[in-house]
Image (cartoon, rainbow, N blue to C red):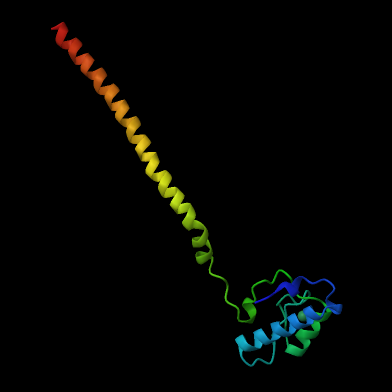
Length: 134
Ligand SMILES: [Zn+2]
């Protein structure tokens, strides 16, 4: 759904804005079904009031549409699933995370092995010392 018309400032002179209002009303009618009144997303009603589509149209042209009303949830549009959006962005990170995750334990193991060698070596030295003392 093209909503660029919502940000047009010179809306009274803009054919694109009026077409956008029409497309919005058609969208609302198609998704909400036959309704005597729909919520008005104009800058004064802000979806808090309901009017007939004719009045909504006038409001939207005279007052302008609330440009923050990007997803028309009150007019039948479903909210984009945040999970799907996150997944798109998480997948590459997970790949990187897996690579790093594979490297970190390797380094950790190497360090641990070194520490164990030092520890065992030290312990053996102690044992050798003890053995030598007796
Ligand atoms: Zn209104």
